[in-house]
Image (cartoon, rainbow over all chains, first blue to last red; front, top):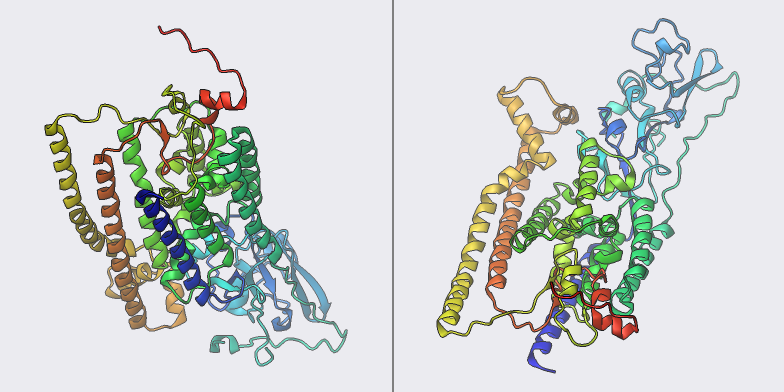
Length: 182
Length: 420
């Protein structure tokens, strides 16, 4: 082996050891948990960027409903425009731009509200109404059947409230629960 | 939980009349872990296959087939994410921020092709990277880029690498991912700007071989550096070089360097070259120092890209009455009720980190420019046409142009055209 080859081999070896060192440092700090993106509903300000900033044509963010927090109101401020013409399913009364909320009569005077996820665009208009005037049972979540788990979530990049972070993959959703029950 | 949430404005009903059961919120499952492991396995297999095809099989056709597979698997199926180019940012962030939980996939994707480059050169670029393979497939009529332009433009990749590392290490975001021109193509959608950029790059790659890989790709720059040490590399001729120049003509990426001609014979010429080299070596520390100084100056400006710094600036302007109203971000911050002092202190910490990082980045850019000048001034002894390991991506195009290779394969060697 001549001198040139020796130096080449030595440098290569050093570089490989360096790469190994980086892996070592990372492994030492690494928490053995997979992570996925999720919205913290307590930070979310319903700015509407979730509907537009996702790399998917139809956002991975959808509205979800924590039924046990819901007041089952007749005048649901997540469902109805601020001054509805009537408390019925007429399109002119609905807050949702795509009519994605299904209003179902349960018993006098209670109504149950379901989200039709194929129609929901994740704009958060209903969430704003419910959070401001209601119980806050409607909230936005990243749906992991849709989310492609980008290396850097492009909604998180523009989220004004810094509400989107990586969470452990074994607890991929934030469950809002009734106060005192949790 | 904040006190704000303790307001249960409308108590949930008991449904004594109908006994209605509350429905449960559905929670669709996360992408299965084995699929992620499949990505890693695919990377290992395709990388090994690419090295074998490029260095042992020496087959362009088989590499093209592998490239098409990569475009579909890593590109259109995995939507170009995770990719090795972007994953180096995760590694940078993980090294700078101990609190960051880096996905294991990102570690493998960032470091495995680098280790492979130490052994086999840039075979990752040839047919594993979907970005590179896509540009390669688009290539129609490669134009020769003049050497001076080639050398200058290639420096851009190192600058981009430096910038990306600054932004990643300070936690300001992953700019390689943000400005990736091909991911919108793989996703078949995106913002108009990025789709336009992607289409622009694809159109450009019809006539300029792999424009992103050569002149911008920060990972390609790293792989090029690793390839300088590669143990096994592309050897164009299996036997002796007849200096026919056919391989040089065949390379669409300007990666084949000619033999050094006319070595300086006069003592005066040799003395001039030695003096030039000495001057450039002395210039190197100066360039690094200038880079560090400029980096320090640019730090605060770059820091504005960080969420906390831009938020602190906005809030400060609002507090001093320089601007009216609030933005979404400042309104959201004010709604949290966190003290202003904490925000400003945090922003100060981030800004300092930015200044430090961009000093490193500036020094890096000075070092790259200085070493580039030195490498151009060193006279090398090359008797044959060779593939420059830094630039060669192992596409295997040149092999079939070499008459010696055709002889090896037992294929007819075309007659040389009569000299005109």
